[in-house]
Length: 80
Image 1 (tube, rainbow, N blue to C red):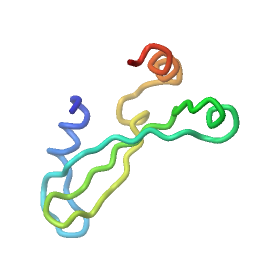
Image 2: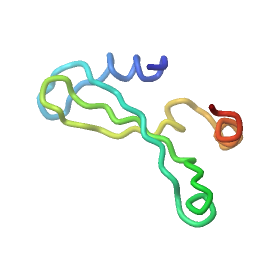
Image 3: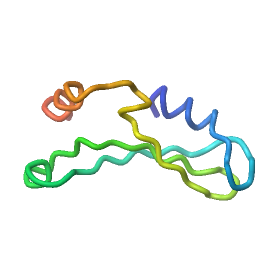
């Protein structure tokens, strides 16, 4: 897990059962049009699931990481 994932997992407070801690998984999805055609996945999200009850919240990684589209493009081009 990255630093953001660790921080999110530790800071998570469940809105359903009020317990602390979450398991964090990342998901990347494509949009419509050309990104879908070339299977480019510019939209990245973190799913934080409560360790107690499983309630899950979705967070936009672009907002959490403060990254711009240039970083996303570079990641797509140079990712392994």
